[in-house]
Image (cartoon, rainbow, N blue to C red; front, side):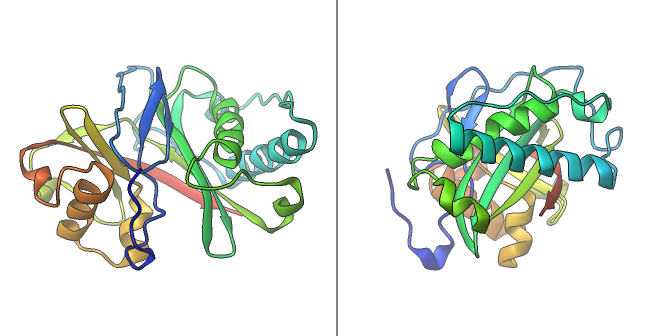
Length: 224
């Protein structure tokens, strides 16, 4: 594990995988399995209405309340096509301005609302950078959800748009990602965004991105 100074906002999400497509936020060397599923729509084809976002936030909140109290998941059902899509998603948990957990998947074989349930529980209990979230703390937790498009490989930074795209870097077994909102929250330009991801997330040095595979993705981001 590699500690990064708080001044560099070290607790942003990066990714590794321990099984199939489940990805966890952590530091260090990251290995990601990425599989293309043709059934996943692009952001141009996929959107969420305000009521869909509210239902996903409700899902995450209800799931955490039930799981942290009873240690079991809760069964939910939604009929909307959007909530049953096989999109990737990250769930981030914040207490005040401090990140308390962030875990997600780029792709999923289960409905979106079920993925949000799984990632909410994982963010609260499996992010190794933090102590697990306690039930008593839940009232202070703010939930943020990022619903992701598929990864798209790019050849130059000219194809990266700050505020629109997240970045995913792969070089051999070293990988790392930063969600789209990280660049805008830190007022980074493209160079800083990619260099930070390469150095602190993929662990390949700030110039390592220049001979690595680069991918972008979009996200629908919403929070409580």
